Length: 129
Image (cartoon, rainbow, N blue to C red):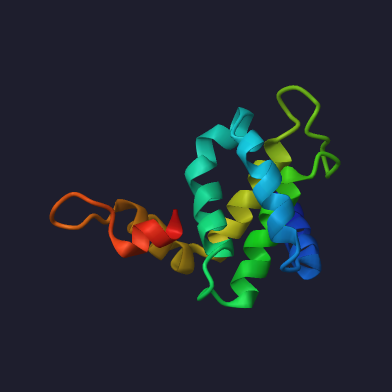
């Protein structure tokens, strides 16, 4: 899948995104940490944190939802059931979303790394978990 195709798919799915999609994602996301997605799983979890953050803008959430919906959909550009290549288009769409949302996703990655002085999770990390 070319970079242009990945962005086109991302925007196609993002335009259809709705708050109801969050439950679909919640139910299926855990089973997607496989194949080429394993290498970018931290990006996927950052997108999920954005999706579930009540303070994130809807525009950003829609992009994140669109990308993750594409990931969990078994019948997308390249069906996920095809060995080796089935998740490569999904990875491309996730990376397109990450590139689009790079600045905003930084806070979700930083929150994952931040700890309080006594070693416990900060409130930001607990909220994002």
